[in-house]
Image (cartoon, rainbow, N blue to C red; front, top):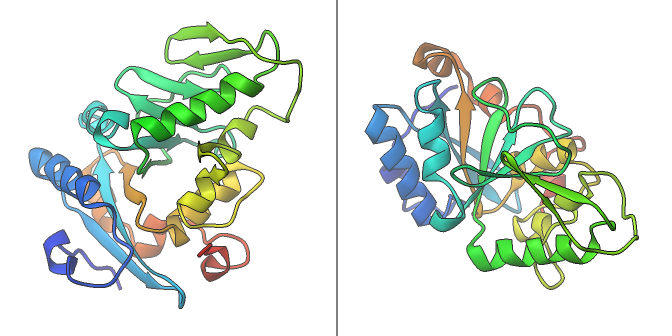
Length: 235
């Protein structure tokens, strides 16, 4: 059954809720635009998750991306129809794009926020600079940066996302509390369904508020990862 719960009512429960700062930013974004915050809870046995969802309307799209960025303690994993090739919003006007495709505007998909701070993101960038093939190109927003590196080829363009390091030996997936994956289309559902408290609010792009209100909890969460959510938990 669908539930629309206020963040404050759940603050005392022992669920893996978003970091307080991201939860506060979620509330501020929702209050600013008169939008609801939907909270979905799931008991996975070894982990209880609490995922916050907010609508992203055509007129609030830019403000959502301006609210959640590295400076405020988050990156935004933006996935449209193609879940295989997401882009990462770093800060307003700056997007991490490994395959030369423009960061999508408002549309179908989701905006998944992950608690990543400046030092962690800088470490990730350092990893890219060490391993990008010679002459490789990193696309960020409308600007293109040619980066030094080696001739070693480590895989496809999404290698840089699924193998992202936030600290020495600390993979993005495991930091967020889930098992590692070979592709973004596998990793994203694991993060949404089973991620720990570092998985922040999920923005759902919709044409209007009515469309968001009609969505069930299962529709907000999206398809469960293969093998079930509980199997994706990484202690």
